[in-house]
Length: 185
Image 1 (tube, rainbow, N blue to C red):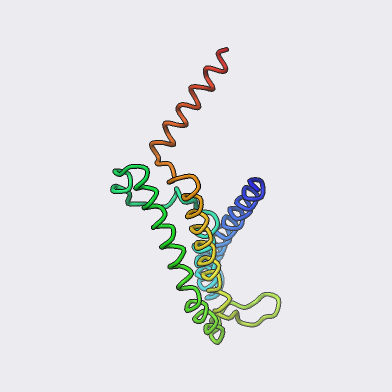
Image 2: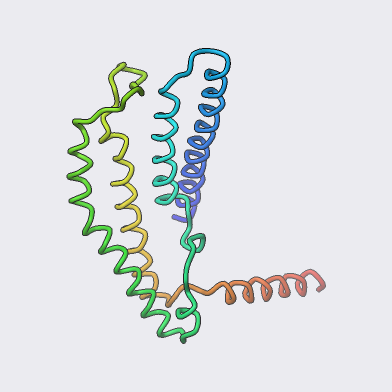
């Protein structure tokens, strides 16, 4: 299972990196077209579409829990049992909130099929892209975040609250000291 998760994580990072590289390449193409040829409006729209996809795709599949900005002064000042309760409440609230908003959000995304992109066209069919397809990544984001926090809820129930940064640092130092002792013998 860990191998699958690690492989999926690497694939998600590669996809997000590819989208960022595409944004950069299209940006350079936009500059080239603007100053040396005829400006192309599709570059701006495509960069905007890719940016929406990068943000929600990366937040759903690449950004780890410990990478999020947190305001955890109160969380860090309480005991382990209280931190567990806080973590359970937070994970449940996020998972439930995301699932609660899914159907109304999906209805709006589905409604967006009547609107189409202004200049960007499907390279295979030549048709303008429905805005539903552009914003469908947000539905994926909602489901992924809900699943992630539902998993976190059950993980906190089984294993207690996530370790704080200080606990992780102390653990890493302790492991390094044990490795040094093992190498010395």
